[in-house]
Length: 282
Image (cartoon, rainbow, N blue to C red; front, side):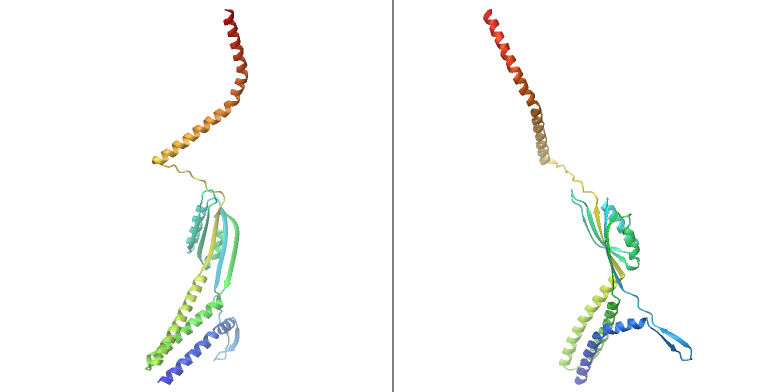
């Protein structure tokens, strides 16, 4: 029994390696054969055409859109409503609104691929704001999807065969080797399935990153303090305003005081002199 299991395991390893290496080539051949037309004859002598339909394309759509709006919050709300109505959702959102600077927001939308172009046109319309820039990209991953699907199918079949061999094995060394091989194959299968799931998500939903820029800076708001500290602050502010007002008045009156001294001092001297003269005469 042991030689049979060892030989079977070795054969499975070789078949798996060959299948993984030829996965891309076979999927490419299938893609070319899918669009080929070959005339032929059926059993009854009637002529027919064997047509193999091409598999649906798997496209990953991404877009980066920048819009300028006078009300960033309103524009963001309208954009979310448009995406939600199309069956999409918000993948990520980041908003910034600091006093003295222009508000902004960055929202990453996930939109069903079938509705991608229509929703993108609405997001880039004047309903949201003024378009600043738009960059789109489409990546055809049909070949990769077919290759990963094929490798997942092959990995599952190989695992099933190894488990059957493990059920028949009786030698301890064979059991250990088979369990190690099964653990390795399970890890590979999980990695392939994760990639398969990621590709399915990317091709099912387009990714649109919307950047919203405000047109005017946010106003600075002055918050009033309450309590004892607020009273002290208000009193000090009032005192500073009073001192400033007094300084302004003094600065305004000072030139006139100088003029009054220049004119009034000689007049006062003359008045004192006349008064002294009258006193001596009397």
